Length: 304
Ligand SMILES: [Zn+2]
Image (tube, rainbow, N blue to C red):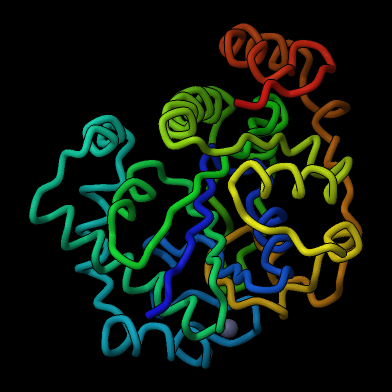
C-alpha cells in the first residue's frame, strides 16, 4: 500500500470539524470520512451522509471488508475505544508508552484509515474524531504519516452550541447535550491536550472564526504549515461547502447530510442569545487559553 497521510484534527467538539472536513475533503487527493475513530461510526445503525444506512453504504462496506473482513464487531471496538480513547492516556502515549493492547487497537484503527484511502483512491485522509490519544495511536506505523491540525473555537460559542436544543441525527434521535459547565471544562482539557500534541508534533492551529472568514487563505496557510500541497485553485474550491452526498460520513454534525452545496457563514447566534452572565463565567474559567487564542479581544491567532 502506498503511504497514507492522516490529517488528524484536534480540539473539542462543536468547533467546526465537519465544516473543515468537508472543505478539505473536496480537494484533489483528499478524502473526508467523518469521525472515523468514533465508535458510533462502526455501528450498523449509523446513517451515512450519502443517504444509505451504514451496512448498505457501498463505500463503508468496502472499507470494512478490506480492513476487517466485514462489518466490525461493535462490542470489541467499544471495549477498546472505552479503554484507550480517554484523555489521560495522552501524555503516556506521547512519550511512547505502548502495550500489546494499544498496539492491537492502533493496528485496527490504522487498517480502517488505510482502507478509507484505498477505497476512495486518495492519499490524504481527513479525520474529525478529535480524540488526542487515538491520534497518537496512529503514530509510528509503517505506511502512515500523521499530521495534526488543531481546530479551536471561542469557548462561549462552543458552550452555547452544546446547550441549545440539539439537532436531530439522520439515523434518528438527537445529538447529546452538555451543560455550559461541562462543555467549558472539556474545552479547556481537550484544548490543553491538543496544544501539547500540536507543539510536540509541529502541527498547525486554526480558529473556526478565521476559517469561516477567509477559508481559502486559512486553508492554504495550514496546509503549507503541515507540509501538504494545496491546489492552485484552492480559493475557488473552498468558496462553498460541498453537499453531504459528496462524502461518506457516518458520524459528524447532522449538517453532514445536507443535499445541496451551501455558503460558508459564521454561526454567531451565541452573541445574541447566550445569557451575559454565562458568557462572563466562561470567559473567567478559560481566560489563559482565551487570551492565548486571541478571543479576549479581536486579534490575530498566535500560530505555533
Ligand atoms: Zn455512504
